[in-house]
Amino acid sequence: MKKLLNTLYINTPDRYLSLDGETVVISAEGNEIGRVPLHNLERIMTFGYAGASPALMGKCVSEGIELVFMSRHGRFLARAEGEVSGNVLLRREQYRIADDPERSLAIAKNIIAAKLFNTRWSVERTLREHTLRVNEEKLRKCSAYLKDSVNKAVSAANMDTLRGIEGEGAQVYFGVFDEMVLSQKDKFTFTVRSKRPPKDKTNALLSFAYSLATGMCTSALEAVGLDPYVGFMHTDRPGRRSLALDLVEEFRAPLCDRFVLTLINKKQVNEKDFEEREDGAVFLTEQGRKDFIAAWQKRKDDELKHPFINEKIQWGMLPYVQALLLARYIRGDLDAYPPFMWK
Image (cartoon, rainbow, N blue to C red; front, top):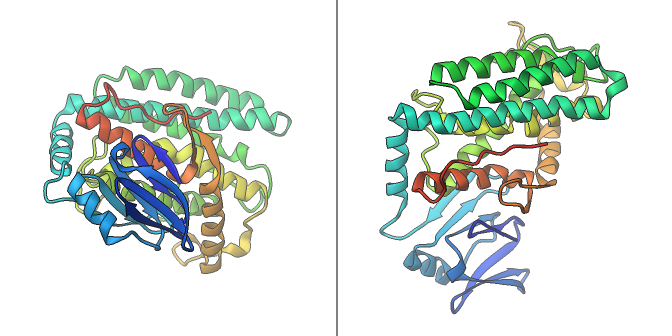
């Protein structure tokens, strides 16, 4: 149980929510374990299947408090809300911003600057922890380039320029990614980022992690009332979750890349976890996916201190916090969207 940004998060799946007057009562196996006054809340998000009482659902609906139900793994399930909801106003403003190149650019610059910043600190972390095992000069050169790219992203004059800065930064970063693979080098050699399909084991791991993180961002955006299909940097395309693809950029290096490197370097994956198809595509086996997801769930439970809200949260909650901050900016509650910047 955690309260952030006037949202009550119920992270443990066996918690049942009920109403006592003007208070949310949190119970486990019939025993009360906590209470939170309703008047302090804008939203309740519960991850699990124990549920909520009809009385609480009715009270939330009448008071304009969103009650959001997520699966244990973070997939959006449903939202209980009243007859009149602020989501339509939020989404209409989202669409206005998406149609305005200048306003879209302001958000996109913050997101890409954060992506480049986080990518740089992924390199810096390897340098700090494994100086004697890597090509220090090569990694420091990459870090310096990414540092300069952050400044360029912040001052980008238009979206095409920003995309160019982001693309060049990614190319430089993936150009040294193999340096950060410290064990099983013969099996997990990385030369270039390949996506559709991944052409080697490391790319298969990265693609799967990015897919899971994008799903988390999609659910987070749905949960706060934003449309995950209408983005600011990624353009509209049928079936493409453009805003989720925007949001996930901030998490690629600190959440996905570092996780994949840990799996490889700690030998939590091996060549038996992969299968190569006739066209050269490489994918995780069914057992490999199961093991990957089990480790991913553990990673999501790890805690970090969020640099903007200055509170400890689980990594798995990060997309929901950022989605809330984005929604608050779109509503006009914040002067600018504060992206996630990690060290």
